[in-house]
Image (cartoon, helix red, strand yellow):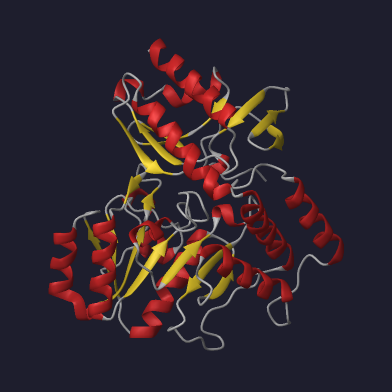
Length: 378
């Protein structure tokens, strides 16, 4: 059997990681400013993370949700404390797509409606409802297509008000990213998020805050939505939640009742996953990584805005998009192959930075130096 060939692969085999540094099989060292799609939140192989996982693996790796698991209760309590959402309820799953799928389903259970508003540039995952809500027809199969998805221009309050005016009584939920990731690091304005909250409340719809990439401290606050001063009905999470261990979750407002069998998962909230997620939150709390993300992100963006040929710099904290002219579309590859720095991209020519939240200033300065050097070579 061979692998199903769906991933474009860089000819690099990473065999070791520490902090924001990774090493390839040939010994070459790289600076990792992408963290495997924003997954590495506290650095590769953080000692506390390794200790927590090792101890749990030696005790019990998995049992199903048919028995008591005190680690889940501990995780919910600590997440409530660190996130400032102590009164919310936690449903644990395995991925961002699964979290979004369950949030949309839960909203529909509550108000018995079918229509969901999503936005241009959105990416919510690749499962059935999540991919239907994603703004990329190339990855939406015919079986995923549905008239229940209503697509509205991102950050357009008037368009949002118009669709609620026309179909408000049929709308079950609004789902959006506080900062679009795949869409090019585009930040939802405070005015727009406040309009989402106002309209969903007025029409009895649910506000689903997709925080899979922009959450878990990446923006400098636990949820990027917190900058706007609004509270969503549900926050979906994954990626940085487990620092590489597959974990996802939905934080659910206290007003939404649970019922046995309403949602479910085999692997979600397993013992190893909870140990990984607890380790991440313990490091976030103990090492003040959100403060670091906020301060260092602001520094990086200020420095980038002063560079020639940089069209625009967007983002918050350590979720940064660098818009460059299309003739620099090969910049990401040069950063990887010549500067030995992993970054991400969004089409047509946006460099995405999604490093660990405990990135050091010296590492940021190295990137800035190499970035400016590579731009001058074009």
